[in-house]
Image (cartoon, rainbow, N blue to C red):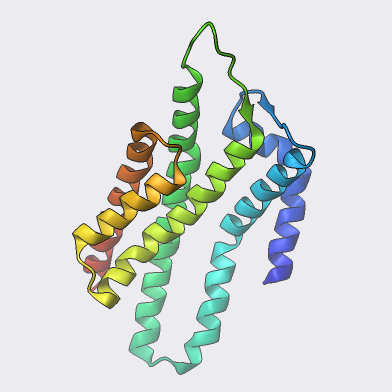
Length: 195
């Protein structure tokens, strides 16, 4: 498993500039000596993990399948497939829709006394946090069912997580929090349909 993730990261490293240009067309800067390298590495690691999620899930499944009954194995397959599909829908929405919208919105702020310079580390940090939040979003319904956590507490956790991940403004919190809540509700709905 580690070899496939490392191989994916190395392959992504070859096209790191193209990968970043697909996310934003803005000119990015770095202000520390190692920031450019570390930011591209963080970007490649995030996308390497995103690409390898099916393999990671398959490895976890194969490790645990021997101890399951037939009906449990069937349910685990159903849930893993639905979680995988939801994960890629969430990642697609974040990387293709929400992140560019957020970047474009904040880059249109115009003030003649200010010059906008976006650090590459800020962009890659947001991508990493979105990756982590998308995984947590899909795990929250499972935790809710397992530990009987009420919906209002899960929504509070989502909003707190959004406040930590995003810059300190309400608009970013809403732009991340509402899709997280939507995908949380969607995963609960799909889970009920499967039962």
